[in-house]
Image 1 (cartoon, rainbow, N blue to C red):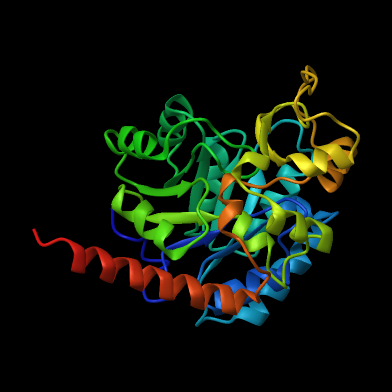
Image 2: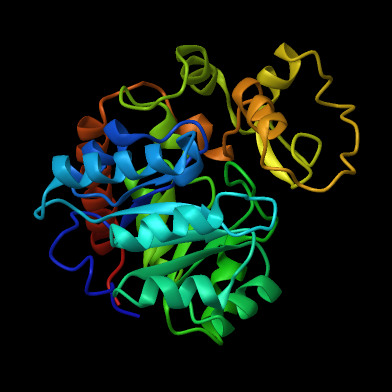
Length: 312
């Protein structure tokens, strides 16, 4: 599947900086887009639909038409009381693309398509991927094992291959990617974009607290805990943040109540920090522009290394 027309000629690297709860904001999105990588943020990172609309207007004004497109994440779940209002604001401001999570709803897809926008949907298994494809989404974000946030358990190579057998739209691969070489691997496996989240937490424009960034620098893959104890949905979290919250990472309780996107969820994520298994490759906190320049160099070096090392 070719890169969608929306992105052609406007990106320097096939990367989407993932929308991260409480972490992504206008500064990170703007600097990501200006550097030639697709930026995004969750609508719920703003306290109100009015504030969300203000962020959209600010990002559009600061990025202009030459930068990479930006997108937003909408939680499509009945517990999100703001969905209708946020969707209406998204349509009003004609956001270039929307990432939907926790439900693929054809009415949402139709609303975005109504003004020419694209819809990409998070999936963690084949059943979710098939349902999203039936809802008419333009791209599937394959959230594989090791991804930060609400992650799946599938091997990325197996997951992309199974999706590609029935889906010809855009595939975005998520899971433990932190370098330009990882982006090359995602493309080689059959994905159109790589989806990087954790690597962008440790940037100067990230809204993450400094302690969060330093915890990422100190962590390796063994320090990531996969659990549903935080929100009721399985995700990857930094064990040190679990310990700081008074929890034993080796003996976390089962979480039985239904997912809730209200104040309790926000408090949990504010104090217990998520990260993917790619933390071991993160050694510094550069500016977003510096990070993207490095990813571009690493991408080119990996392609050259592959071309030099094997002749078909």
